[in-house]
Image (cartoon, rainbow, N blue to C red; front, side, top):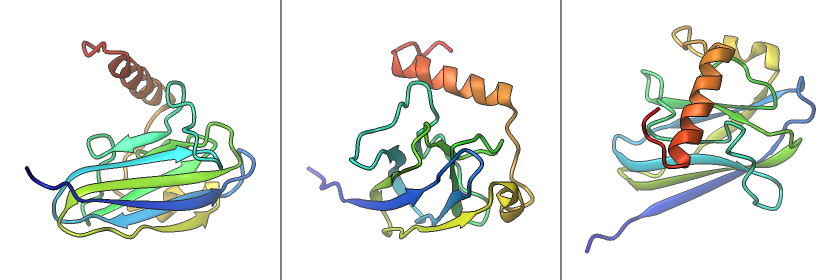
Length: 151
């Protein structure tokens, strides 16, 4: 039986109010990785409301940019960008990453960027997500979590 090797990384984050600075996490991805996920928790490691909020991302949901860097935006307000994690109203919390069977173990970096400057700090090729598109993503994720894969 093959041994699964997993690496876990956590970063404490402080967001503050909805219009406050945004945490911006970058990770250079390994060449191969069987599974990866990121999730937000509150300060005592309880998962945030993933049913109503966009608070977790796996490898299929969060693509890296063409330069091999995965960029995650953590904020209380939807920035209209992909790879967003919603703080669900928590001013502080923890972002946790799990990396399984990867060719190397990534070490994320986290920095704060003013919410008004987030889009400018991403590659120009970063797509934008409308509120309607975000709602559809949330509804689709909810349906899949509840066992309805027909959406």
